[in-house]
Image: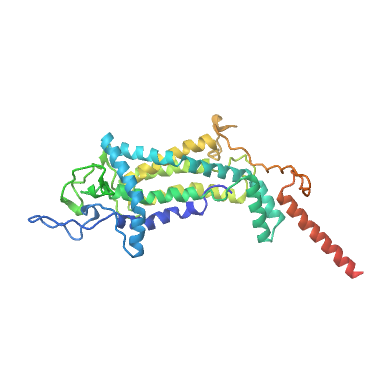
Amino acid sequence: MTTRSWPARIGPLLLIAALALIVAGCLGPAASLPPGVTAPPTPTPPAGIPLAPAPLNPDPFSFLSWLFTPIFQVFFITLVVLDQLTGNIAIAIILLTIIIKVLLIPVFRRQLVSMRRMQQIAPELKEVQRRFKGDRVKTQQATAQLYKERGVSPLGCLPIVLQMFLLIPLYSVFSQGLQNFNIQPMMEVLGFTILNLNCDAVPIFGPNNTVLNPCLNPTAFGVNWGVPEVFLGSPGALFSGLSLLAIISALVQLVASRMTLPAASAPGADDQNVKMQRQMAIFLPFISLIYGSILPAGLFLYWIGSTLFSIVQQYLILGWGGMFPIFGWTPRFAVDHTPRFPVAAPTAPPASSREPGAPARPKPDRSALDRSASAQATIRQRGRQGRRGRRR
């Protein structure tokens, strides 16, 4: 049992479903126009409405938007501060990515350690399934006991869910924050002004209801990081265009996915579940190509930087994992490679010494799994002897 569990499979779907909540949550009421100013086109695009924290209303939609607003505001204020310091929004996005990944190092490391230990005890898990085949309750109990003895957490997928949900507020940071003409309300926290950005009082609209005077400069290195960037087709809908950033994101995710798999020579690498996970590790990263024409370029820059950071962490803890062979080829540097901080194989804890007068404890070399299987065999044997006695 390794990586790519159900949260990783449905994560992209959860992302798309939740984006609408944050887009609505980060928008405030439209500002009134001064006398003599022509009203903007109808309906007003989101970038033409001042960006403000979502109010708390009794309906569920507003509540979810209000719930995500503090996370959005923290990310957005950090990005604005970094942009003011560097004068380059792309560099600010990269620095924001590094800050987030550094804060998540303990969580991500725990996930990698748990994942590696699950791979190491895969043969024992298979033995549990063989011993208690047909008895689901016994299998679950023995599996839970094995996890406890080996110090393995079966909840290693939770960090994946956390990282996926971080994309939700970040989507609004890039799609709304980099295009809006007035983001000053988001700079107010508990009555204090973090930064005075001197945004324009009214938006200037261009073709297709685009805002021509965003408060922040969203362009760096010739790319507008607040909108989808495609080199083939047109943005605006699924499958309508192909993004270079989406291709790069898919390739680095492919590397990260393969590195989390067990090596081809590891015990249990030929298991059917592992083979299925290898196939999914090839297919799932390329789902990002579908979103390349609707997600802002800044989100892909964040995801690329975040994945590269994860690859370095995985290299230090897991090594190359299942990255090689590729088309039957394994480079020399990957042969018998040992990671810098390898995960020790989990072992059963030794039984504590018996206190005077206390009942004898089982031998330390026998795990609870072995004792349970032995008890089941004894019960079956006695049952057969009893039936033979009744026949006589």
